[in-house]
Amino acid sequence: MDVLWRDVTLAARMLRKNVRFSVMVVAIIAVGIGAGATILSVIEEALIRGWPNADRIFAVRGFSPTKNVRWFRYSVPELNEARQIPGVFESVGAISGGRCVLVVNTIPEDRECTQVSHEVMPMRATEPMLGRGFTAADDRPGAPKTTILSWGLWQQRFHGDRGVLGRALRVDGESYTVIGVMPPFYDLWGGELWMPFQLDPADTDRTNRRFWILGLLKRGVTAQQGSAAVAQFARQLEREHAGTNPEYAGLQMDLWNVKQAVIAGIRPSLLILLGAVTLLLLIACGNVGSLLLVRAAGRQREMAIRAALGASRARIIRQLLTESVVLAALGGALGMLLASWGIPGVVALVPWDELPPNGPVKLDSM
Image (cartoon, rainbow, N blue to C red; front, side, top):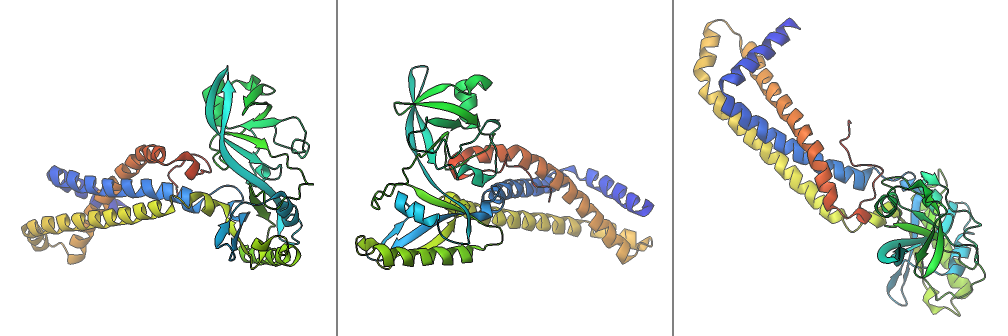
């Protein structure tokens, strides 16, 4: 340990003798690591980490060869039948997002509203921070209309007032009672308000396709098994209804992970950023290597004197490596500091509804 400490002390002394070189190398390392850590943290949040149950929540998508169109929206009869698919889903529900007009203090505002069946929000395994979630009773046709607010809307328009529970809001000309507020960073289909669909189970119109179908796979069931089950469901629709609904002829269905569906719009951009940051890191490494080689060439006389005084080749190499490690440590520490400052700025540039976080994007200690 004493030898290591002497090496570090000597390395620090040698680096102080050439401050311009040391600052330049540390800055290059810091910029490379800071930019890389920032982008990788955002990419990890968007592409790798995810919502609770993210790997188990899937949208049902279809393709009709007769119309040459891909399906994402379904009707009430199709939802009812999807709920009967045996063996793969823990729950199945409906979801659809869009714009709505919210009236607060007589002032109309354009907001993102998401309609859900009562099964959908529990799939995220996140409870409201205030109030309660939707129940089957809230989702019955003719039941009193209720809504749950996002944390952002609650803070922005209601100033975090806990008395918002039970308050009546006008949404698209109808009265909704606030029953809950979701926690910060919760996102589901870009909603600022969520309300129950109140679908009529007796609806038999197969052409009125107006919502996505989401399914929560049972634990232990793979995506491949789920896709095989919905493919069989497509065959069932074709057998039983192709006579009255020709679009079912040859219908193909599979499952699409909902996280992949939500981030599909920014995935190419994030991957391009990842490539750019990788290139930046390679350039930084090349620049630092070049600077170290130039410095080593200028220290040939110093190395010759050390060798003449009895320093072994291994001792000289160890000292040079120690200097490089000290530079790398300083650059890495500064790079992490730059990343901690840069992440909020990068996140602010990403559309909120396209980057559903599991919490604030942060540096991963791993």
